[in-house]
Image (cartoon, rainbow over the protein chains, first blue to last red):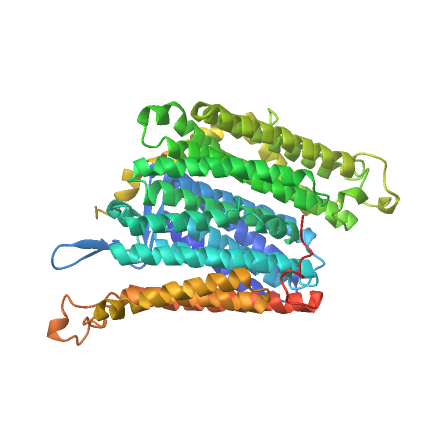
Length: 517
Length: 121
């Protein structure tokens, strides 16, 4: 069974997605069923991570033992659909399954009163399938297919509350962005296919010559994935989509965004990794995009009144940290001394920040969802004095806000500190921007805390109570993870993050599979 | 000279369609027209894939009953498969976009993208 894990990771949630609509009229049965499927997938991904860490890269070929086709002339090429899982893929898969599980758990109460729940859970599982496919595949065209699956499922979920016009508006924005981005991805896949006659990432990466066509393909791929991961200047869809989507979907939607970030890293480090000299320029572009993204994101967040919109702008700003961290690593990729001195740590910071951010941003967006659940509004000016009524939500919010601002015992500090330290060594200005962004982040969360939780109680919310149990449990799990990752960062770094970084850096390992090359 | 243009005609059309598609998405204000722009883009990309798979004088990739001279002279079937997949995905995307457009028209009473803007700031 172990060797079939990559296929099962797709098959189980796909099965779940197509069986959930059978529970029509019984929303809670659909919720329980989706929760079971999500738990199973989480277990599978834990097994997958263990397997990858113990025995290295896994190659799974659909419908055959070997990925190669040997022609009579002795020439062998990779054919068939191939999944190629290394440590970073497994890392992303673990984040995706964990967040889908949390999302399904939280949704159990959060969307109970809506209609069409069976479709909601089917789409949630379909979104999971899309993310998992993107991070596990070793084939460019499959990457496009799963990108589209995640895009369609995600935008359908953004527009889930279709009795609100705003939801449809955010949904079509998200869908247009993701449709254009993935069509352009397909176009550049066509360019690469026309030149090399193959779609396998590992095979292509050995063949790349960096001709003009390759440069165009790199440019289009880089732009499209940067667009999909919400980097400045194409960040406008992020706040709308994250604000309008039900809070239970937020974790999965966040991971979907970072699956595009993963694809960006995969393109830069693996597909075009051989051309290391030119890639240092790409690394600098990534750093500058990162700095711009974090700064513009946080300044836009400061002026928001809508609590969820404020947090969504912070999601943009935090994406900048990941781009900065990995960009520093990419910029020094061709310089072994600098790479060993700080490049590897910078990438570890960037990748560690992905999982940390997914955890605390989901937590924060869930607390925003909890506020919306009890008050029915997202406007900060209309809330007040909720701390005493909702103790668990308040604790969860404090943990999340402290983590996102990078205050020591929480997980945000661990990864941000790595990024400050290492980006300082590339260029001090980068670290200054990162620090200023952190301070501004703290400022805006103080504003939320003061206006929603503290202050005089508002009469309208005299009788509000703590949110239902499933929501509390989901939030407390995430808060616990925040503290756990903050107290023992080395555990996660050594077990998950550094293997992931090494998988990105070790191009030769990715290329030698199946005995082809 | 004439042959060069004729042989590259599909790619010229692809470039034209891409330009038209991006123009439509960027400058048209009606949502339905934006959706049509995305469809044009998709047509361009699909045409590009199909044009890649066509080799002049080569045989279709059918392996049983292939004639003698077809050996080493077949086109790869992959681009066609990719195009079919991408068409199917495109149908789903456009259906969802049109559904959103209908819903926006119901709530806002307009399809003008500059007027249907409640989310801002």
